[in-house]
Length: 199
Image 1 (tube, one colour):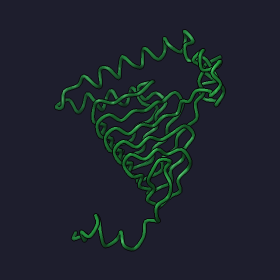
Image 2 (cartoon, rainbow, N blue to C red):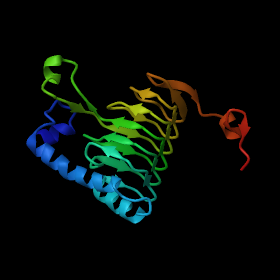
Image 3 (cartoon, rainbow, N blue to C red):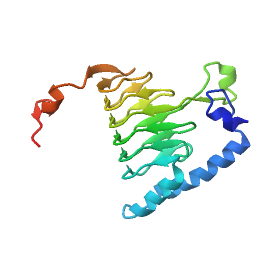
């Protein structure tokens, strides 16, 4: 059955009628979430609890949110923040640790399609889970590809395309995204270029 294949990494047909019917129900709730007014914070939180596989305390997602399954396969820890236009291609599971932040226009894409044209012509796809650690920051326009793991405390620079695993406690940038440097002693003194932390 295709539902099992969605989470096994196997190739499957996403246009299966049972899948499409279930997906459509999820997307109705996503529509409702994106149609909320700024003053309807309680309504947003209630909808997120219905939509997501797991969502912790003190999470904030700024509409619009885009998600293939409206978050049905998304697991957020506590205190996760997402700015405008977070896109979760959540055809399989996405795990995000506590206190992680997403800048505008971040894409978390679990789905891929075969390179072989004959399979792609029939719209076959496969899905690989994404895991993002605790207290990460993904800058504006970051794209995370299927199967990627990002370690705790790591910062991914704006516009990066993350095609492979990134370890904990580093700054990583680029396309493809690579480790630029570890988070170190200078970061304890400066928060931006030559600007000192004065807290």
